[in-house]
Amino acid sequence: MKSLKRIAVDMDGVLADTDSHFIAWYYNIYGIKVPYEELLGKPEGEGFPEKGAARKFAFTPGFFRTLPVMPGAIEAITELMKDYEIYIVSAAMEFPQSLPEKHEWLQQHFPFISWRNIVFCGDKSLINADYMIDDHPKNLDNFKGTTIMFHAAHNANITHHQRANTWNEVMALLKSDN
Ligand SMILES: [Mg+2]
Image (tube, rainbow, N blue to C red; front, side):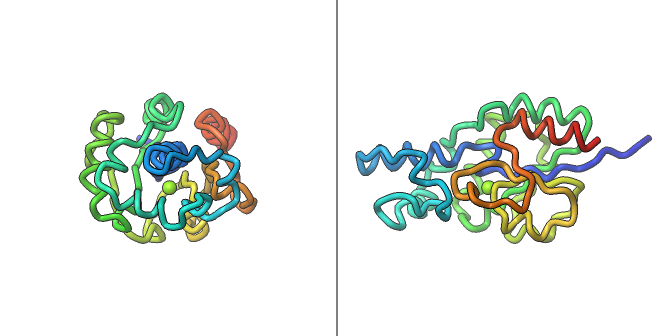
């Protein structure tokens, strides 16, 4: 039997729509609706008027548990699981309180993913797979396989990884590579 290729899939900014969530939380707490365009090309969370607010949100209980699912992610992962081994790889240790929330979030939205295929870690350079789908160049830069950078506001100006703006584009890139 031919072994399936492995894809390491990130959570924040890839399975979960972190940019929209930051904007929504900022609006709820500060009453200011920051336009998405304001965040383009700025380090994650730094496009908001109150510096450090986004980072504070990321340490607030409930933030990760209530993230919206990235449009098309559930359908895409369901489809990809037919042809690939999918691993969810999240550098969750940066926000230790997020671990149970991320686990519950996956159980709610992606209940078909086994615990064996969930990797909560620190540095992703240890990860070995055929593909990595991630929004952060720092994770993709050290990866030995094929990289797909999922579009996020903070990576808008990064050009040294192939970009997918949507889950449909991820599917098209994977199809063209096989
Ligand atoms: Mg991410």
